[in-house]
Amino acid sequence: MRPGDGVETYGGDAQPRLGFFTDTSVCIGCKACEVACKEWNLVPEDGLVWTGHSYDNTGELNANTWRHVAFIEQQAPDPIKQGNQDFRWLMESDVCKHCTHAGCLDVCPTGAIFRTEFGTVVIQDDVCNGCGYCVTACPFGVITKRELGGDGGMHKCTLCYDRLQDGMEPACAKACPTDSIQFGPLDELVERARERCGDLVEAGVSEARLYLADENDGIGGAGAFFLLLDEPEVYGLPPQPVVPTKNLGTIWGAAAAAAGALAIGVAAAFLGGDR
Amino acid sequence: MSATSPTDALSYYSQPIIKEPVWEADIPLYFFTGGLAGASDLLALGAQFSGNRRLRTSALAAATFGTAVSPYFLIKDLGRPLRFLNMLRVVKITSPMSVGTWIFSAESATTSVAAACRLFGVFPRVRAMAQVLAGLIGPAQATYTGALVAQSVVPAWHEARRELPLLFASSAAASAGAAAAILTPVEQAAPARRLGIIGGATELATSKLMEKRLGKLIGSVYHEGEAGKYSRFATASTLAGTALMAVAGKRRVGAVAAGALLLTGSLCERFAVYHAGKQSARDPHHTSIPQKERGGRAVTQPSSRTGNGSSPSASTR
Image 1 (cartoon, chains in turn brown, green):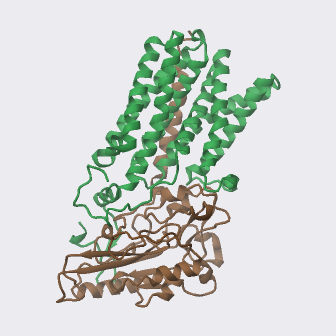
Image 2 (cartoon, rainbow over the protein chains, first blue to last red):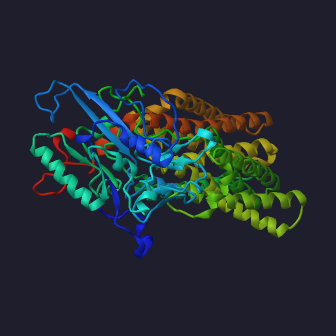
Image 3 (spheres, helix red, strand yellow):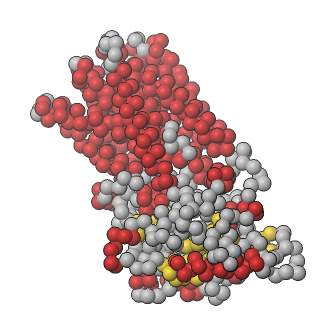
């Protein structure tokens, strides 16, 4: 996997790119990752609600939820527990993808969002002015504004930047009892994930697939990628995410052309006198 | 969820994939007032060059009003308004909001200087220079906001990236022409009337082109909900304003009525675009279906023997 955009500015201080491989085939839906994340990062409690969506009462990733376990109940044979009833339960612990080409980082007008020496993407809370542009630029709907207590800033997973700097693994990966969340150097993780996916397919789990593990996808590959057992949309993930910056040339070109058209329009308005 | 979304398309409990923009009504109000200011500065510059002093004063007044009220909306919408100045820490070409903050700051400064010098009748050369600079920055101010919303993953905005800057520019032109036509005696207001007509007609054509290019699925937002209401009202108001300005703009009553209609149409067009973005962000299929049709390398199924990513299996179609 290529380095994240901007990591070259660290020169000799750049570290190997670190990330997550979330293997959903061994997730048991315990939500220990959600709890560990909230506890370690002091992410505030944001309400206890019943969604009616299986065991998912967390709902979504947002400013106050940096790990979210999705639960999907399907009337389909379970490929892993063969011989089981006609039912399977998909569980997936979702997280910020720490994109190689990160839309949030590209559009942040204050420089609050930056690329760390580990290739991850972090919001500096003391710089963020709460403009909300990053919310519109994330292909995964990860970032939102924290309204609690008048905070007003944007928040998301930091991949436990503080723990990384002390050589520790992120809280969610540390707490995961089945190693569904694996942490480490991204290149090692990708290799391990390919092997795991290949083994699953060979064992008859033809639905196994990797998501965001290819550096030629629309975001240049992710620092947090997944092994899924169904289409990405089933888990609430975009099937082919693309960073909007990919079309930046077209966008600025259209703006320049429109500015030129406005100038021509005003000039034309003066043809034919004042009366 | 959009009525045109297929019911069998996959989603996670019909929940959105991307997040709805957190921006409130301040943002379309900023787009409108900022656009009015930008196009009015250019109109004032044109009037300056053509020697139409009365029109120049009117256009400068409209530009001053726009630059005076637009920062209120812009800053009020921030989650942490006191940190507005953090925008001036960096210059980032990948962020139209960053580029736009500098455009907006330069336009505010030059317009304020031009207006103050005119009001107090001092420093004529400084005033002339400020007016020229404001006029040159004006078109950028009127169009960058279109680029700002286009540089996003919101389907109704990103997929309209070719049309949105022109839509905003023409909407700004219509509003600037309308404001100057209201503020200027009809004997000196012909360029303002023409700008209102050119802007209004271009705004109508561009919004229809945008809807068409968005296609059936995403374009449907302009026929539903809040976006549908504002879009219909904007079209009717701009159409009526453009026509009235053409036939009755030379009479005072006609100019004022046509100007009011064009201003209303321009304002509602920004609200239509704003709500269209929110509505399309809420619908997971607006994100997933076009992505699936385009394809890509996000989903791969490697075999253990080669260790290389291969194309997704048939099950991903």
